[in-house]
Length: 309
Image (cartoon, rainbow, N blue to C red; front, side):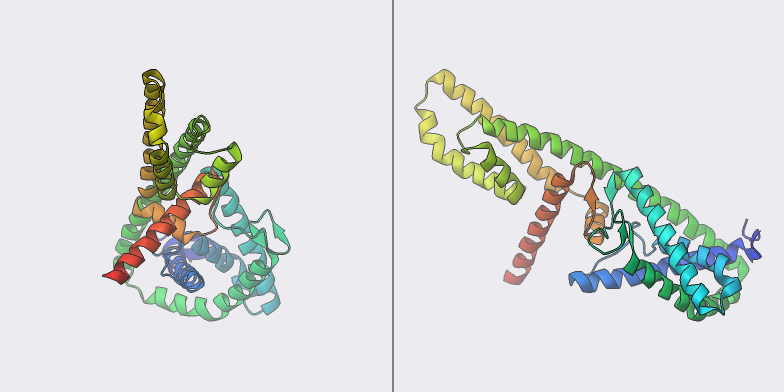
């Protein structure tokens, strides 16, 4: 397998190029997002330090633009075109597979469906020139210096790791979509039940509170209103009181479930939300926003605890 050639380059060499550029892409993205958010972020779809989209784009650029490596204009235009097509297709594929947009250029001028934009494509073109003129010769030397036997063993291990990492990440994203769907259903039921109580004056008030408050804040607000209504409830006839108690217990269960669902998230899902701040669900974006707000509030609470200690 490793000795198979494609366009005159062995599969082993192409694989090494892919892994190195995937790592460099992850490093560049992580530094950029960490500086932008002022927080250490592991940027990338996978949990490990690799961004396959960079490795894929780099391989295509190496295979197609090597014959014109001395022509700066063709390098720029070729990198511009190849990187744009790769980013667009992968963005579209991720939207189709996971019903979510992972990055959004819709506010940038000359964008196409928010997946690509002129400014970013120009940056890819410049990066392609730098890659082919500076990085690729050095990476070729590194690849040639790797002992083939040890390199093939290490390559096989890394390939297995990528398969496992990809599988775990995909499963976590699918579970995240399932949680968002369940949260959306619970959200709708809870809102309907709250409309049948006297805790909130109008439907408009309920909608406003659901959109502006985290689950933790909503639960505290609801409990405060419950305490205020307790005296009035105790004066009701037994049958009416039982009906209200049943309704309130039902609301309590659904609110607490919503709170548990929002606060319970495995590390991979938390990392993905932090790594892709522009992540938007095409079906359940309101719940995704609520989840992000809850995580943000929890992080603030943890920071306050660390400071107080």
